[in-house]
Length: 133
Image 1: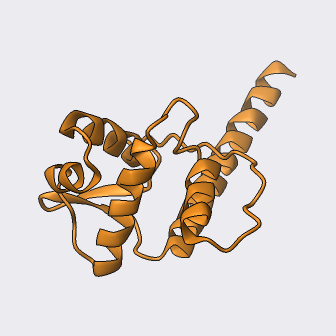
Image 2 (image 1 turned 30 degrees about the vertical axis):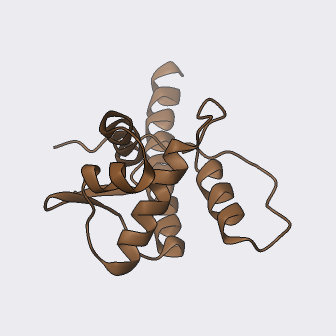
């Protein structure tokens, strides 16, 4: 099975204050999870519920996320799929959980994913360069 991930890194100015919500918003925005089109911050609200559940080590269902965030289940599933595509969230049993309960470890895992992909890109680029020479 081929794992396909869509990872986006956006350079955004870090928040000046130490407000946890601002820092979480910055982290998710920097990882391309939250867009300006998301006016009601639905993905951010889902992300918060996943962070809470992951800290407890308990998967959370889309229905539970929907209830806690006051979002439709369809909206929740849409954003969960986006978070899974980014490699941030995994399905576990009958729910969803962050790939790692520690956000710093989660970022390190994403960094390793990016580095592996860059190595593959370099290898293919070298092969292409040889073919074109």
